[in-house]
Length: 400
Image (tube, rainbow, N blue to C red; front, side, top):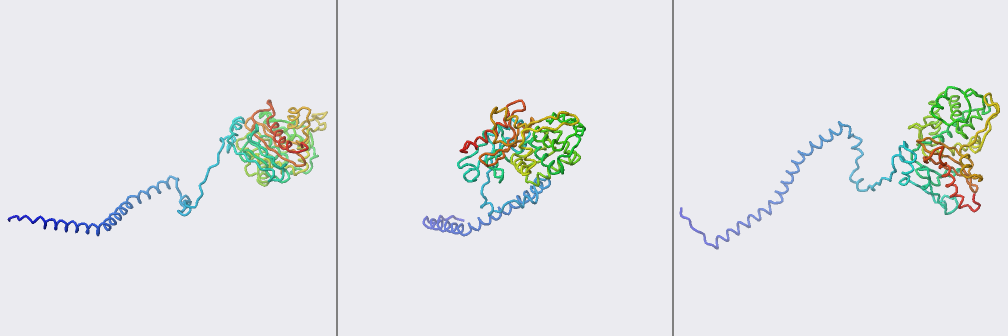
């Protein structure tokens, strides 16, 4: 066959018609092709990822890391759009937070990052106008100040964080002893069985001896003034029969009066990692106990003389541990605005104090705990109480 070369002008026309046809075809078939390709990609992707997702959920469910309740908690897209961002509060070291198992000095050093709340007195109507009580610069890393009649918290520093209450525990022991005793003038004989354990624990004692005869009233004073463990245990065995049963009674009372973050294991406050409270809860306890006239009379006493007994023929006198420290701290000064207090100390709890004061006709309760020191150092817990009450007195024209 003989090849005939087309005319150049005719060739150009054919090329233009071919290019135009291809362009029209592309414009017509392009969206459909793209749509078809997209559907194919999604289909094949679903075939790939759906089994993987099902397998992942199954693995997490079997290993216990995912449950139906977890899936139900996942928010909907609408909830995600309307949720406000959450911010975690600053938390001090574990010693000053949920676990009080710490040296008191370590707890004090963590107080710089702890939570402090102060209430404007002009808003509360309790304190002199303009006064703000500062509890952040105390020796004690746990502190709470409240007005007695209303229970309103005036200021607090780590007031809701766990701490060890030490012998402040005996406030609960004393009020239960009062509530479960019909006649405090009844004479009893101190048992002998618990003395060896108290001696071994180096527990604080009031001075009663095994087998000594005394009135229950004498033992009550022995609990709150010299912090006598033998006095506590005599009531424990008389009321409940055992310390574990008495601890259950303590915890029942704690729940009943609103101590929501407290657990007692014993009646004396000797250290146990599961025996804990908060400054706020101890303030609730002290306020409750002070409503009892008998408790208040004992709590605000500076000294008490026990009548002669079979083992103390001349009787003996003991003193409030708080007032002894206060008198040593400010010799010659009466400090009569501080009405009473219950001290506490263990090496784990540090120096503790729950106190009552009256300034310009208003009664206050202050709970502090965790101050570094011991029975052989300066009484930093009492020094803290004086410092706090002095803040209030400085705003009172009469000085308290």
